[in-house]
Image 1 (tube, one colour):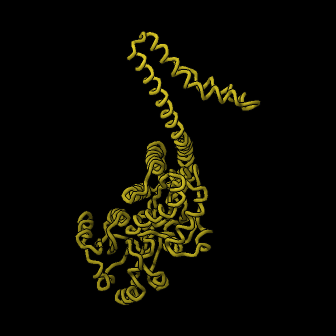
Image 2 (image 1 turned 60 degrees about the horizontal axis):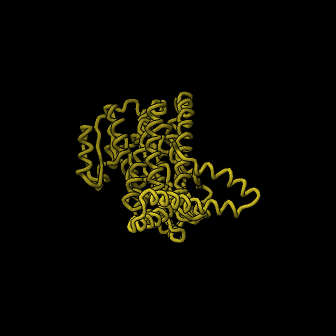
Image 3 (image 1 turned 90 degrees about the vertical axis):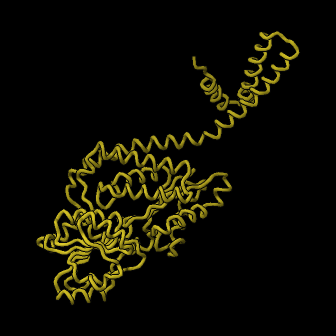
Amino acid sequence: MQLLAVGLNHTTAPLSLREKVAFSPEQIAQAVVAARAWFGRDAAANGRANEAAILSTCNRTELYAACAADNTVDATAHFLADFHRLPYAELRPHLYTLPQDNAVRHAFRVASGLDSMVLGEPQILGQMKDAVRQAEAAGGLGTYLHQMFQRSFAVAKEVRSTTEIGAHSVSMAAAAVRLAQRIFDKIADQRVLFIGAGEMIELCATHFAAQNPQSLTIANRTLERGEALAHRFNGNAIRLADLPQQLAQFDIIVSCTASSLPIIGLGLVERAVKARKHRPMFMVDLAVPRDIETEVGQLDDVFLYTVDDLGNVVQTGMENRQAAVAQAEAIIETRVQSFMHWVDGRAVVPVIQDLHESSEQLRLLELERARKMLARGDDIDAVLEALSKGITAKFLHGPQQALHQASGDERARLAALLPQLFRSKR
């Protein structure tokens, strides 16, 4: 079975390409099913079920697979291009294609926060768990990926509990606050708007709320969900549809929705800036695909930052983190070797099953023979003697025949191996 991780992230691809390859939450199940079907012919030919899971965040899109085919690394890359209707030649230079232990090592590093834009950030672990739940619901998980992801979560827990990787992490939310403090002397004097009500917005709201802003507002498509989040921070909620009339009220805007198209256009912001009489607006777009049109960043009095921009703000405490990284990498390497040993063990399972089945057939044949001997009145000790000798003879027939038929080096290898295989445990 071939294990694979194929994808792109913030280090291999610009935001403009990452947003083209991102999967919306509504697409994940369909994409998992499509990925399994993409390898369907190869899997059927080998009599094995293929597996697939997709992780798509603002910083990465990755397809994890377990397939029986030999040529699946390139085929997986082609799947990403085909699904998003992108030219393969445009996508391929930005993709990493990791087979076998490299795929496992990558999954462990991602779960542990070592491959994140913000080193050690914990959010990715929750995102990976969500991806696994979605893949499982879509029927994408089997023995191999299920085991790999469960071990990924265990490794992440071990890394966080035994190293200081988390103690020196800087979240995207904290970075957004620090950027805002470069524009405004006191966030306590500003009105803050959050667009969306997901996990990232919740994290950002927590960090900004700690600065005691003048007001905190949540804009969301579903007012009830926005109100529930706003209530936690003693804030207000508005409908996303009301944004055009109210945008000018806010000094700080942080947006992160799952929209496939921008929800804040250039014209909307131009009108807001005019209404504000050119008082500065600080905007953070954490969504992939982006929520705010890129042209907005060219306006005077508007300071627009994307997820890639925030990556330049989080490079603090690197010396302390690097010591923790070395510890984490050592843990991961040990766990990768353990998992690959398990994978290798899975390869002999069919052989062990065949041995059990053939041995059971031999046992039943001799047992039936013994019962016939007892039925005709043979002495029980003689029957037991014949039963034991019959089972032994049948079991040794194959190895003995192989040894007799072999010659030269092959016979020498068999002669050295057979005593190990038939050494009894006393």
